[in-house]
Length: 138
Image: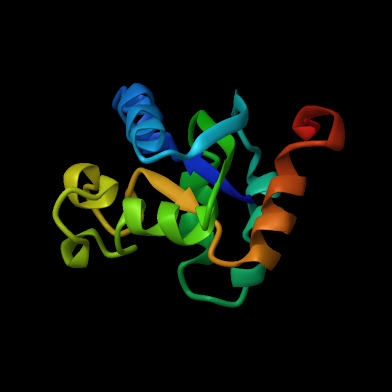
């Protein structure tokens, strides 16, 4: 079984999409093994997205991600990373497949409702950023 991080971003939380995102996860056999709601500070958002610090979108992204509450979850399932990324849809919601979370709910490329790890390495870092071993133990 593989694990990955999922974030319902501030736009998804503010728009009342938590239940819908969770419904889609569970419908697609992605088991939630840890979950919490929190609000990142700007500094915490910068730490989480540090890999993008030299990209032109970094400041806007970290401003947005620290603008409101988020829901962070660890998902578990067979090929969880790839399956969740397919369920999310393309980062650019205009290019996302029909029926994906981003195609159905995103309002722009930044306000695209969800985040998911893109590799086993990033999943390990991202899960560890928000959850300690006590919270993720079986």
